[in-house]
Structures are given as structure tokens and as C-alpha cells.
Image (cartoon, rainbow, N blue to C red; front, top):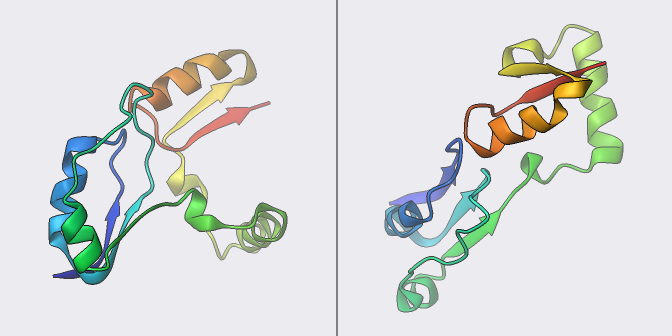
Length: 117
């Protein structure tokens, strides 16, 4: 059984969460890192499995980073060539296409979009 299951789909599918919980061992954790549709508001889980297995279901945005300290650190690593951010970009958008960028993200077409000013 897994200690940690990380859900990294483009757009999340709530019906997969019980399967992820089933793969998770006692005292394990399922981490949701991807957005879900706005109309997806509930999932079916075994509450006894959650309780008796002491399992956790948590969300995480950007690895729970602290933006005020971690973003400058990451930018410094990028500037010195220690972090290749370009490989992480899936799409770029001019500022006037910001709404298309959000629509693409919601549709699962874009994971890491960047606005170009």
C-alpha cells in the first residue's frame, strides 16, 4: 500500500478519489493538486476506511509554498541556471488572452500557463 498518493491529473475526476484512497495504506495520505470542475462538489468515500485506517485526504496548491519567501528563492535559482522553469510552461498567452488561459486551464488543456506582458 502507498504512504502517499498524489493526484496530478489535468482536471480532477472525483470518482477516482475512492480508488486513490483504496491504494493508500493505513496512516497514509491522498494529496489533491489539480483543479476540479466547479459542479463537482461531493465524492463517495468509506468513512470507516478513513477512520479505522487513519487516512488523510488533503489539498495542496504549489506544494503549500509560502509565496513571499519561496517565489523569490525559486526565481534566484532560475536566474543562476539551477532551475529550468521553461520546461514547466505548457502554454503562453498575451495579456489580452488571459480569459482564454483560464478557460484552457479549466478545460484541462493547460497546466502551467504564463502571461506574456
